[in-house]
Amino acid sequence: MTLLVTGYEPFGDHNENPSAMVACEIDGEEIAGHEIIGHVLPVEFDRTAEEMRNLIETHDPTAIVATGLAAGRAGISVERVGINVNDCGSTPDNANVEPRNERIRPDDRAGYFATLPVVSVVEELLERGIPAHVSNSAGTHLCNNVLYSTRAYLEDKANTAPMGFVHLPCTPGMAAEQARVGNGTSGASVKPSLSLAMQAEAIRRTFEVTLRDE
Ligand code: PCA
Image (cartoon, rainbow, N blue to C red; front, side, top):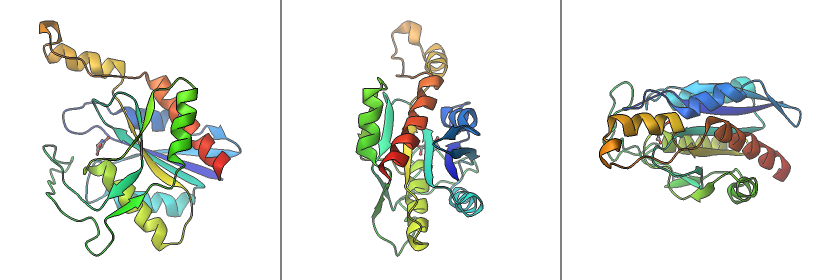
């Protein structure tokens, strides 16, 4: 029995991505008799959804938590919904693909809800002293794309494995580096951050609550 966690490779002007680090950190750990499979996905609109589908077909996970970086968010964001939009804003993907106001699946519905118990997960994280909230928008870049595409795929296959997406903030090291190059000493702001250890713990707890509520 397995649990699948994915992170994303670095993208845009970030040279690290805590979601990839968390996926590698907890890869191989066990939760309630399930082995965690950690995998890093490409930040590419043309590849991510298919790579996720292949992972699901290979590992047949009991639950799936995809994660990615949302630099500037103040804590752990448990996403409620993925929407049927690809729009990269000002950040092309890592293959320089730049979708604008496109549909992910043109004939499909506007949104798919995450099937993780998002409210229970956030309650648990808050009880454990981990700053977290339910987020009502995963944006329109690849994080939203993998949430929408994977939920659509699972519905197509009548696969009831709970699946959702968790946005992670910067690590303290990333926030310090960005303030260093971004005029922090001249009064510019510093981004909020959480330690990698706390971020990894948040994902372990997300799986625990999901299995408990199954
Ligand atoms: N964050 C981006 C894409 C990859 C990542 O880690 C997002 O929030 O969509």
